[in-house]
Image (cartoon, rainbow, N blue to C red; front, side, top):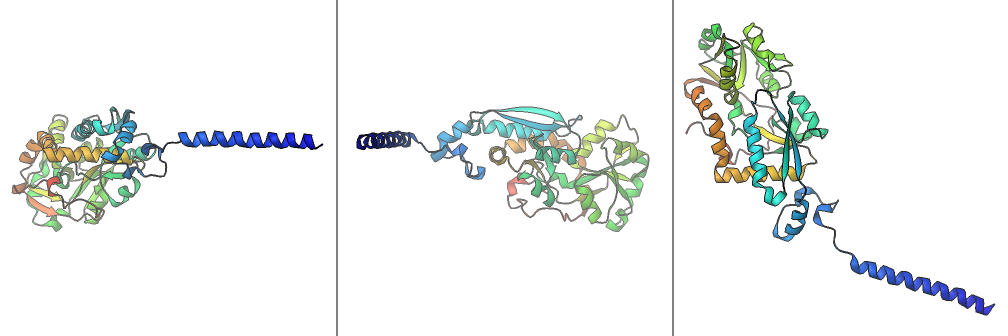
Length: 325
Protein backbone atom coordinates (compact mmCIF):
# COMPACT_ATOMS: atom_id res chain seq x y z
CA UNK A 1 0.00 0.00 0.00
CA UNK A 2 2.80 2.38 1.02
CA UNK A 3 4.86 1.51 -2.10
CA UNK A 4 1.91 2.20 -4.43
CA UNK A 5 1.40 5.65 -2.87
CA UNK A 6 5.07 6.59 -3.28
CA UNK A 7 5.01 5.71 -6.98
CA UNK A 8 2.02 7.94 -7.64
CA UNK A 9 3.64 10.75 -5.70
CA UNK A 10 6.87 10.36 -7.66
CA UNK A 11 4.98 10.59 -10.98
CA UNK A 12 3.30 13.82 -9.88
CA UNK A 13 6.61 15.37 -8.85
CA UNK A 14 8.27 14.43 -12.15
CA UNK A 15 5.34 15.85 -14.12
CA UNK A 16 5.56 19.13 -12.18
CA UNK A 17 9.32 19.43 -12.72
CA UNK A 18 8.96 18.77 -16.46
CA UNK A 19 6.28 21.48 -16.83
CA UNK A 20 8.48 23.94 -14.90
CA UNK A 21 11.47 23.31 -17.17
CA UNK A 22 9.39 23.76 -20.36
CA UNK A 23 7.89 27.03 -19.15
CA UNK A 24 11.30 28.35 -18.15
CA UNK A 25 12.71 27.63 -21.62
CA UNK A 26 9.74 29.30 -23.30
CA UNK A 27 10.14 32.43 -21.17
CA UNK A 28 13.74 32.76 -22.23
CA UNK A 29 12.67 32.82 -25.92
CA UNK A 30 10.04 35.60 -25.58
CA UNK A 31 10.92 38.87 -27.39
CA UNK A 32 9.14 42.29 -27.38
CA UNK A 33 6.22 42.68 -29.81
CA UNK A 34 7.36 44.72 -32.85
CA UNK A 35 5.99 48.27 -32.91
CA UNK A 36 3.89 47.67 -36.02
CA UNK A 37 1.89 44.85 -34.38
CA UNK A 38 1.08 46.53 -31.07
CA UNK A 39 -2.67 46.70 -31.20
CA UNK A 40 -2.91 49.17 -28.34
CA UNK A 41 -0.52 51.73 -29.85
CA UNK A 42 -2.13 54.42 -32.08
CA UNK A 43 -0.69 54.89 -35.56
CA UNK A 44 -0.02 58.54 -34.80
CA UNK A 45 2.79 57.46 -32.46
CA UNK A 46 4.37 55.16 -34.99
CA UNK A 47 6.46 57.89 -36.62
CA UNK A 48 9.75 56.80 -38.19
CA UNK A 49 12.65 57.73 -35.94
CA UNK A 50 16.05 56.36 -35.03
CA UNK A 51 14.67 54.33 -32.14
CA UNK A 52 12.03 52.57 -34.26
CA UNK A 53 13.83 52.50 -37.61
CA UNK A 54 14.03 48.72 -37.78
CA UNK A 55 10.39 48.06 -36.93
CA UNK A 56 9.21 50.78 -39.34
CA UNK A 57 11.16 49.24 -42.19
CA UNK A 58 9.53 45.88 -41.45
CA UNK A 59 6.15 47.60 -41.71
CA UNK A 60 7.16 49.29 -44.96
CA UNK A 61 7.96 46.05 -46.77
CA UNK A 62 4.33 45.61 -47.87
CA UNK A 63 3.31 47.58 -50.96
CA UNK A 64 0.36 49.91 -50.35
CA UNK A 65 -2.47 49.96 -52.91
CA UNK A 66 -4.08 53.38 -53.37
CA UNK A 67 -7.52 53.69 -55.03
CA UNK A 68 -8.49 57.20 -56.12
CA UNK A 69 -11.31 58.70 -58.26
CA UNK A 70 -10.62 60.23 -61.68
CA UNK A 71 -13.07 62.39 -63.64
CA UNK A 72 -13.56 61.68 -67.34
CA UNK A 73 -12.58 65.25 -68.27
CA UNK A 74 -9.36 65.01 -66.23
CA UNK A 75 -10.18 68.14 -64.19
CA UNK A 76 -8.60 66.70 -61.04
CA UNK A 77 -5.33 65.69 -62.69
CA UNK A 78 -3.23 68.24 -60.78
CA UNK A 79 -4.28 66.80 -57.41
CA UNK A 80 -3.31 63.25 -58.33
CA UNK A 81 0.07 64.38 -59.63
CA UNK A 82 0.69 65.95 -56.21
CA UNK A 83 -0.42 62.76 -54.47
CA UNK A 84 1.85 60.55 -56.57
CA UNK A 85 4.82 62.83 -55.99
CA UNK A 86 4.19 62.88 -52.22
CA UNK A 87 4.05 59.06 -52.16
CA UNK A 88 7.25 58.78 -54.19
CA UNK A 89 9.05 61.17 -51.84
CA UNK A 90 8.29 58.90 -48.88
CA UNK A 91 8.96 55.44 -50.34
CA UNK A 92 12.20 55.01 -48.41
CA UNK A 93 10.44 55.59 -45.07
CA UNK A 94 7.02 54.07 -45.72
CA UNK A 95 7.51 51.53 -48.50
CA UNK A 96 6.33 51.01 -52.05
CA UNK A 97 2.85 51.74 -53.36
CA UNK A 98 0.62 51.07 -56.34
CA UNK A 99 -2.04 53.35 -57.81
CA UNK A 100 -5.38 52.40 -59.31
CA UNK A 101 -7.92 54.92 -60.55
CA UNK A 102 -11.68 54.42 -60.52
CA UNK A 103 -14.39 56.47 -62.23
CA UNK A 104 -15.45 59.58 -60.34
CA UNK A 105 -19.22 59.76 -59.78
CA UNK A 106 -20.08 62.51 -57.30
CA UNK A 107 -18.82 64.10 -54.10
CA UNK A 108 -21.24 62.38 -51.71
CA UNK A 109 -20.54 58.95 -53.11
CA UNK A 110 -16.79 59.53 -52.88
CA UNK A 111 -17.05 60.30 -49.16
CA UNK A 112 -19.14 57.20 -48.50
CA UNK A 113 -16.80 54.97 -50.48
CA UNK A 114 -13.79 56.13 -48.46
CA UNK A 115 -15.67 55.33 -45.25
CA UNK A 116 -16.60 51.92 -46.66
CA UNK A 117 -13.05 51.14 -47.80
CA UNK A 118 -13.92 51.14 -51.53
CA UNK A 119 -11.74 54.20 -52.12
CA UNK A 120 -8.50 55.05 -50.36
CA UNK A 121 -8.41 58.81 -50.87
CA UNK A 122 -10.42 61.74 -52.25
CA UNK A 123 -9.84 65.44 -52.75
CA UNK A 124 -12.57 67.64 -51.31
CA UNK A 125 -13.19 71.12 -49.91
CA UNK A 126 -13.06 70.90 -46.15
CA UNK A 127 -16.06 71.47 -43.90
CA UNK A 128 -16.72 71.00 -40.20
CA UNK A 129 -18.98 68.05 -40.98
CA UNK A 130 -16.53 66.32 -43.32
CA UNK A 131 -13.65 66.53 -40.84
CA UNK A 132 -15.79 64.59 -38.36
CA UNK A 133 -16.30 61.82 -40.94
CA UNK A 134 -12.88 61.54 -42.61
CA UNK A 135 -9.25 62.30 -41.77
CA UNK A 136 -8.05 65.57 -43.32
CA UNK A 137 -4.49 66.00 -44.59
CA UNK A 138 -4.23 69.71 -43.87
CA UNK A 139 -2.14 70.95 -46.77
CA UNK A 140 -4.30 73.22 -49.01
CA UNK A 141 -3.91 71.69 -52.46
CA UNK A 142 -4.84 74.84 -54.36
CA UNK A 143 -3.08 77.34 -52.07
CA UNK A 144 -6.40 79.11 -51.41
CA UNK A 145 -7.17 79.69 -55.08
CA UNK A 146 -10.31 77.54 -54.89
CA UNK A 147 -12.07 80.39 -53.09
CA UNK A 148 -11.62 82.92 -55.93
CA UNK A 149 -14.72 82.45 -58.10
CA UNK A 150 -15.42 83.65 -61.62
CA UNK A 151 -18.49 82.90 -63.69
CA UNK A 152 -19.58 81.14 -66.82
CA UNK A 153 -22.70 82.71 -68.35
CA UNK A 154 -24.68 83.18 -71.54
CA UNK A 155 -22.85 85.78 -73.62
CA UNK A 156 -26.00 87.91 -73.95
CA UNK A 157 -26.02 88.51 -70.15
CA UNK A 158 -22.62 90.18 -69.77
CA UNK A 159 -24.13 93.70 -69.73
CA UNK A 160 -26.35 92.77 -66.78
CA UNK A 161 -23.28 91.82 -64.72
CA UNK A 162 -21.29 94.88 -65.80
CA UNK A 163 -24.09 97.11 -64.46
CA UNK A 164 -23.92 95.58 -60.94
CA UNK A 165 -23.15 98.32 -58.37
CA UNK A 166 -23.06 96.34 -55.10
CA UNK A 167 -23.64 92.96 -53.54
CA UNK A 168 -27.38 93.59 -53.18
CA UNK A 169 -27.57 93.98 -56.95
CA UNK A 170 -25.52 90.83 -57.43
CA UNK A 171 -27.85 88.77 -55.24
CA UNK A 172 -30.61 89.29 -57.80
CA UNK A 173 -28.85 86.74 -60.01
CA UNK A 174 -29.16 82.98 -59.50
CA UNK A 175 -26.23 80.59 -59.40
CA UNK A 176 -26.05 77.06 -60.77
CA UNK A 177 -24.27 74.33 -58.76
CA UNK A 178 -24.27 70.58 -58.25
CA UNK A 179 -26.53 69.85 -55.29
CA UNK A 180 -23.97 68.01 -53.15
CA UNK A 181 -21.12 70.52 -53.61
CA UNK A 182 -19.79 72.00 -50.39
CA UNK A 183 -20.25 75.61 -51.45
CA UNK A 184 -24.02 75.29 -51.95
CA UNK A 185 -24.84 75.87 -48.24
CA UNK A 186 -22.10 78.53 -48.13
CA UNK A 187 -23.65 80.50 -51.00
CA UNK A 188 -27.12 80.15 -49.53
CA UNK A 189 -25.89 81.35 -46.12
CA UNK A 190 -24.71 84.53 -47.86
CA UNK A 191 -28.09 85.14 -49.46
CA UNK A 192 -27.33 83.85 -52.95
CA UNK A 193 -30.04 81.95 -54.81
CA UNK A 194 -28.82 78.52 -55.92
CA UNK A 195 -30.35 76.36 -58.63
CA UNK A 196 -29.17 72.79 -58.19
CA UNK A 197 -28.51 69.85 -60.45
CA UNK A 198 -27.55 66.28 -59.61
CA UNK A 199 -25.18 66.21 -62.57
CA UNK A 200 -22.17 68.45 -63.36
CA UNK A 201 -22.38 68.09 -67.15
CA UNK A 202 -26.03 69.13 -67.28
CA UNK A 203 -25.25 72.52 -65.73
CA UNK A 204 -23.84 73.91 -69.00
CA UNK A 205 -27.03 73.21 -70.93
CA UNK A 206 -29.16 74.51 -68.04
CA UNK A 207 -27.12 77.74 -67.98
CA UNK A 208 -27.61 78.44 -71.67
CA UNK A 209 -31.29 77.52 -71.42
CA UNK A 210 -31.76 80.31 -68.87
CA UNK A 211 -32.45 78.08 -65.85
CA UNK A 212 -30.04 80.23 -63.84
CA UNK A 213 -27.85 83.28 -64.53
CA UNK A 214 -24.29 82.11 -63.89
CA UNK A 215 -22.21 79.05 -63.08
CA UNK A 216 -19.74 79.92 -60.30
CA UNK A 217 -16.34 78.32 -60.82
CA UNK A 218 -12.91 78.57 -59.25
CA UNK A 219 -10.20 80.28 -61.28
CA UNK A 220 -8.59 76.83 -61.46
CA UNK A 221 -11.71 75.49 -63.19
CA UNK A 222 -13.59 78.20 -65.08
CA UNK A 223 -10.93 79.15 -67.63
CA UNK A 224 -10.33 75.56 -68.70
CA UNK A 225 -14.01 74.64 -68.71
CA UNK A 226 -14.77 77.59 -70.96
CA UNK A 227 -12.06 76.49 -73.40
CA UNK A 228 -13.23 72.86 -73.31
CA UNK A 229 -16.95 73.62 -73.72
CA UNK A 230 -16.90 76.62 -76.07
CA UNK A 231 -17.16 74.56 -79.24
CA UNK A 232 -20.05 72.48 -77.86
CA UNK A 233 -21.80 75.57 -76.44
CA UNK A 234 -21.01 78.57 -78.73
CA UNK A 235 -23.05 81.00 -76.59
CA UNK A 236 -20.96 80.24 -73.50
CA UNK A 237 -18.87 83.14 -72.16
CA UNK A 238 -16.62 84.08 -69.27
CA UNK A 239 -17.97 86.94 -67.17
CA UNK A 240 -15.43 89.82 -67.20
CA UNK A 241 -16.16 92.23 -64.35
CA UNK A 242 -16.93 90.45 -61.05
CA UNK A 243 -15.47 87.78 -58.80
CA UNK A 244 -16.45 86.29 -55.47
CA UNK A 245 -14.04 85.35 -52.75
CA UNK A 246 -14.66 83.09 -49.78
CA UNK A 247 -12.22 80.98 -47.75
CA UNK A 248 -12.66 77.59 -49.40
CA UNK A 249 -9.91 75.06 -48.82
CA UNK A 250 -9.35 71.73 -50.55
CA UNK A 251 -7.45 68.87 -48.87
CA UNK A 252 -6.85 65.20 -49.41
CA UNK A 253 -9.04 63.04 -47.17
CA UNK A 254 -8.62 59.41 -46.12
CA UNK A 255 -10.43 57.09 -43.75
CA UNK A 256 -10.16 57.83 -40.03
CA UNK A 257 -8.51 54.40 -39.75
CA UNK A 258 -5.79 55.28 -42.27
CA UNK A 259 -3.60 57.45 -40.05
CA UNK A 260 -0.29 56.12 -41.34
CA UNK A 261 -1.18 56.95 -44.95
CA UNK A 262 -2.29 60.43 -43.85
CA UNK A 263 1.05 60.95 -42.11
CA UNK A 264 2.88 59.73 -45.19
CA UNK A 265 1.13 62.03 -47.66
CA UNK A 266 1.35 65.02 -45.32
CA UNK A 267 5.08 64.43 -44.93
CA UNK A 268 5.56 64.09 -48.69
CA UNK A 269 3.62 67.29 -49.40
CA UNK A 270 5.57 69.20 -46.76
CA UNK A 271 8.84 68.04 -48.32
CA UNK A 272 7.57 69.36 -51.65
CA UNK A 273 6.63 72.71 -50.09
CA UNK A 274 10.12 73.06 -48.61
CA UNK A 275 12.04 72.25 -51.81
CA UNK A 276 9.73 74.31 -54.05
CA UNK A 277 8.40 71.43 -56.17
CA UNK A 278 4.85 71.94 -54.86
CA UNK A 279 4.80 75.50 -56.22
CA UNK A 280 6.43 74.49 -59.50
CA UNK A 281 3.69 71.93 -60.18
CA UNK A 282 1.01 74.41 -59.07
CA UNK A 283 2.19 77.15 -61.44
CA UNK A 284 2.67 74.72 -64.30
CA UNK A 285 -1.07 74.03 -64.14
CA UNK A 286 -2.52 77.39 -63.14
CA UNK A 287 -0.25 80.29 -64.15
CA UNK A 288 -2.19 80.95 -67.36
CA UNK A 289 -5.55 80.74 -65.55
CA UNK A 290 -4.48 83.24 -62.86
CA UNK A 291 -3.24 85.64 -65.52
CA UNK A 292 -6.33 85.30 -67.70
CA UNK A 293 -8.72 85.75 -64.76
CA UNK A 294 -7.27 89.26 -64.31
CA UNK A 295 -8.59 89.61 -60.75
CA UNK A 296 -7.16 93.10 -60.20
CA UNK A 297 -9.62 94.51 -62.75
CA UNK A 298 -12.66 92.80 -61.25
CA UNK A 299 -15.03 93.99 -58.53
CA UNK A 300 -14.69 91.51 -55.67
CA UNK A 301 -17.41 90.55 -53.22
CA UNK A 302 -16.16 88.76 -50.11
CA UNK A 303 -18.39 86.10 -48.54
CA UNK A 304 -18.26 84.32 -45.19
CA UNK A 305 -17.81 80.56 -44.92
CA UNK A 306 -19.71 79.39 -41.82
CA UNK A 307 -18.72 75.77 -42.48
CA UNK A 308 -14.95 76.33 -42.41
CA UNK A 309 -13.14 74.45 -39.59
CA UNK A 310 -10.95 76.47 -37.22
CA UNK A 311 -8.08 74.05 -37.88
CA UNK A 312 -7.24 75.51 -41.32
CA UNK A 313 -3.48 76.35 -41.21
CA UNK A 314 -3.69 80.02 -42.18
CA UNK A 315 -0.63 80.68 -39.99
CA UNK A 316 1.59 78.79 -42.45
CA UNK A 317 2.13 81.51 -45.02
CA UNK A 318 4.13 79.23 -47.31
CA UNK A 319 0.99 77.20 -48.02
CA UNK A 320 -1.03 80.07 -49.46
CA UNK A 321 -0.96 82.10 -52.65
CA UNK A 322 -0.56 85.87 -52.31
CA UNK A 323 -2.31 87.33 -55.35
CA UNK A 324 -1.15 90.82 -54.41
CA UNK A 325 2.47 90.02 -55.21
